[in-house]
Length: 482
Image (cartoon, rainbow, N blue to C red):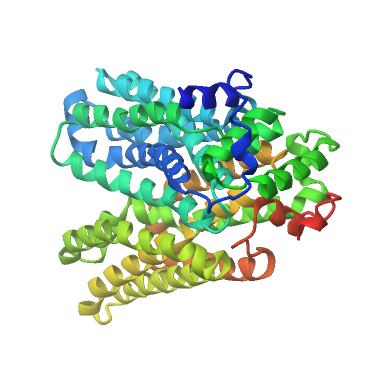
């Protein structure tokens, strides 16, 4: 009964409000409880796991689908790449959807598209239905890629926000690895059905967690805002200071006009836009999707003996290293972690480039496979510890809530465009020069270090409102939050 009353109030209904208001400002408050925040995070990252499942589906199923449905290589290439096209469309619409119907509503829509897409793939008898299903799942994960880190950032306390948001990247990696492993054991149709499972868990879980209190405050749902925040922090926790801070911040924003996409390039928003877009450009053009999608071919190109060993090592490295990154996020800070990560990706690309340089010139041929494996593994370990997750964490933190929808859509769109560009050009670049390809990527890693050192603020240990006071002093009244 109590749970139903909480849900009613969160949705703006007055039934049962008496008795629920009293604990909001308890005379003897306890330390905030984290169990609801953790539950919300676990529910949300089901969307991240779904993201990974979609990305990892095509690799283990390629030969079987082509044989059974009589697809040409070009047709299967379309099936694989159309995912990013759907994701781009999802990225464009993700912000407005999340702002209009809420973070939970956006996740429900995304899960529905993914379920429909997987069923279309499962029932496919030819290329058209296969591509249609893949396009729908792409649209779904395009929304997930924005709304999941934003939702987690908006519900988490400032001391845990970085680590919890990093679970987004961890679950993407885990979902991809699970899809790859399952694909070696079950049929491609059965694997498509397994992609429905995380969506079902997500839809069911959303019934038991509150909406983002910051979004509720933004849309003027005062009662729902207080109840959602109280549920997140615990029934006996004193939320008065945090609630007042969020309300004061939103009050200042109400006087500002609702920005359009072009308005993001005004002076008061340009710094967070440059930071968000820049981080996504450097994340993608450091080569992750080219190196990741074609790791097996890269190892085989370096030497026949390195193919299987390198691929197995690659699969085993991602998850534990991403866990380490999540543990370091709120201890080391965002800037040091991403700069160390970029330094590692530079080293990894340089070693891989050196291995192909030696092979092209017939030098130290016994070292070529070793350097190639060491380089790629150094790269993926370094990327997983920081470059994979930190840009998404920072993206979810730096934008004012009234522009977060438009700005988030722009940033996610740039990320998906970069993913498509790198994955599409990788084979062409490798044909041009294998060593040159990795040296180009290493150059982007060096530029990442300079960019982060000069422009990216440290957001560790700050509330979202304090971050805005630091980045956007033009918004009057927020200076007092420092």
